[in-house]
Length: 168
Length: 139
Image (cartoon, rainbow over all chains, first blue to last red; front, side, top):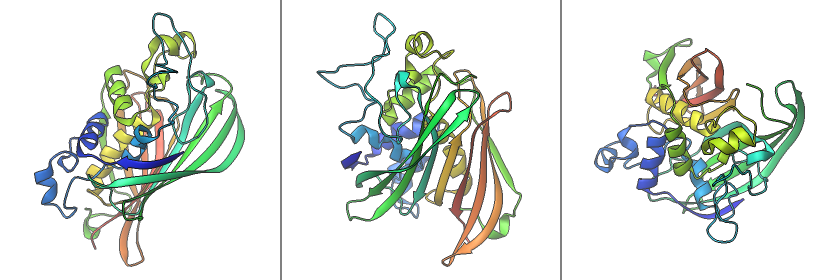
């Protein structure tokens, strides 16, 4: 995955913060945020995940045109794009799941920043599990840089492919 | 930001992150994050084809909810590291409680830091997230 322009916008931060139950004004109130040491609206700690919105090839977003929407219409359907990176939370019927996620914060991400991101594969390994059969883990490391080329976040995701649905 | 003279190793902070998690909140997270995996939003696909009892939350929604508690505790812009393992799935109807425990207070490159252990559990006291974080504190 490579993302050329991840526009960090105040309205997106507000929507993201709402979805994780965060009413902190630092994420939506410009007047409040200006008066803090941070000097403006910042992004919550897991916001970098929403860079998927700016990845042209992100496989878990329904596409306009050709491939169209995936998911069930009239009938239950598992038609889905193919699974690749471990950075997301995995793909549909392929039983891909998100096993771990780690963030290192080097600089605050602020509304108005324009980030870019590059992802490299990390380690991969296998494990047997009683709850879901053979597990194949794969790691991906994404570096986010700001408009000045400074490293702001290093994100390491671990995805797992399971043999079957996880017993709960 | 936490102050060094007001905290000690072993201190804990906990909060209820969500009560009776709704499918609509999962949809809200899908829209905000951009992750439209049908396992999280498409009940008939998830039950009839993927073989799960219902849709379930994105791991990153649980990490985000836990992050809300974490930043409420350590303050804005104070986190240096935050990492988790997703140990169990989170289902609609779940009530999640997050807890952080101070495991170390130390100095690195001239800044004072606190290391935290994190655990988020559901209503059956089963861990859905375990992890750790490091945050800056005031000397």
